[in-house]
Length: 239
Image (cartoon, rainbow, N blue to C red):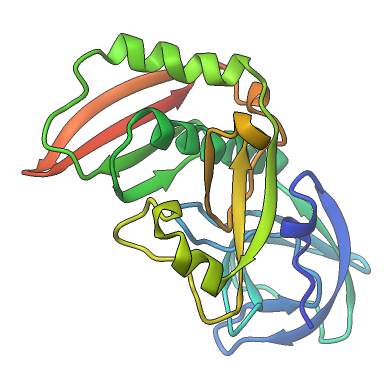
């Protein structure tokens, strides 16, 4: 079985693994991938693989069959052979930016209480699309509330529920365009806050910081009208 190291510890920067296969397109499959695969609006990780006296730059990672993660080389080069032990090293600055921004977008979905129709995560800028007719009236107040949640330094944790439990609590799902997979039996939830002080609890497979204080100062950017009932709000990490 594939051991998803990015899910086990989002702060792990380097790890060993063994090559279990290659794809016809030249991708690499590992038994314990550290690289997060593109999904949920979050880009795949990049970095470097090293083995013996060789190395290979990884441009991104994508999802394969089941739990498989496929590492995509930045250029056509000799691949580590099946069975080889490799050392994985992430571009940590980029991954950590994604972790901070992904968590920040969860906060944005709290302070803008409308259904989410789309989103995109970058290391310094991200955005969410909301099912709302009008732009927020007071963006300064919105920004202040976001940063208050950051400075509150709330814990960010994960837990798992069954598909049946999610069906019984449909309000947990904020995304209108993409629904969490329900066929696997277990669904990962990300919680911001704890106990009665929880401010957000929703299905999510991405990587996040451990506390909101790690996000840093947030700035509301451009707010665009993308349709009669669609507003796109950009969010920036300012430090």
